[in-house]
Structure formats: C-alpha cells, structure tokens
Length: 205
Image (tube, rainbow, N blue to C red; front, side):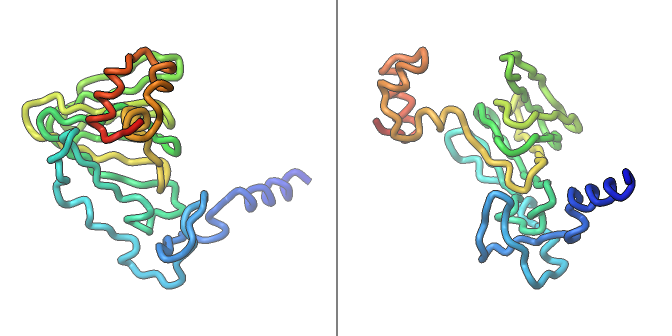
C-alpha cells in the first residue's frame, strides 16, 4: 500500500512530470506562478546575451543591475532560477534592499565588494569580497553591496526564482507619497531629515 501512495505523491509534487520547461509567453497573461507557456519554442528561447555589456552607472548610486529574469529571459520561466549582472563604479552602492521571492548568490568577477545582510534577529553578517569569492543572501533578508575598492567592480548574482522581486528600503520610505509625519512617527528621523531624503529620491508628502 505504501509504494503506490509514494509514487502517486511523487507524481503530484514533481513539476518535471508535467513538462520539461515552460518558456514564458511575454504576450500572454502573467500571474503569481509566472507567465503562461509559449506554444512554439526554439533554442534561442534558452539563450540570452543581455549580460555582456557594462551597465550604466551614471546615476545616484553609481551602480547598475542588468537582470535576466523571466521578463527579459523567458527561458527561465517556471525553472526557479534567474541571474543578473551587477556593475559598481568607484563609490557605487546597492542600498539596503530585500528580495521577497528568492535567495541570492553573488560571485565577484572583478574588484572588491563589501557585502552583507541582516538576519531576522538583527545580527549583521558582512565581509569584503574579492575576485572569485561567493556570498549567499537568504530569502527576504535586508542586504547590500558596496564597491570597496578603487576600481570598477563586477559581479553576477543568481536567484532561486525567475522573478525574485525587489524592495529598496530607502526608496520604500522616501521615494513615494507616504506623509512625512507618518515616517517621523514610525522612525527615529525628524521632519527635516525626512524632507531632505524625499527631495533626493523624488518623494512627496
């Protein structure tokens, strides 16, 4: 009796029994499980060349993230993986942020990057990483990356989801219309500091 039940459960919980892959149809609907499957598939659906070029770091954070998520690389749709390129100019930073839908693995290709995360117990884990070093960031935890060297830094980051999601803490607080008095009451910042940050990040209220 046990063996038939085991095989039934294995069938139910194994996605590979349904299909080998589900290349995303970017013209179709998208839901929590991702895009619907494309009907006609070619080898080009499983190849992406968008990470070859250096990202534009001429911005406030002196950094660029070039994603290869399901929206850019439909071949990863439904596979539980994705990747992105991270370029950091001298002084560049990826501010404190979180990926609600995925864990992350970073590998340094060039330069020195100070990276770290904060656990749910508010313990900080950070270290300066050099070429070839790898660091993991658990799903949903706040983390950051900083160019800690004197030259351009390059890293590639992989995720345990084709659409990991992103929320940058500073932008969540100061780049929208959340009223200053509410932020003041829920943080240790005064109104002048909040308005200054809203001005920098384009927020109102």
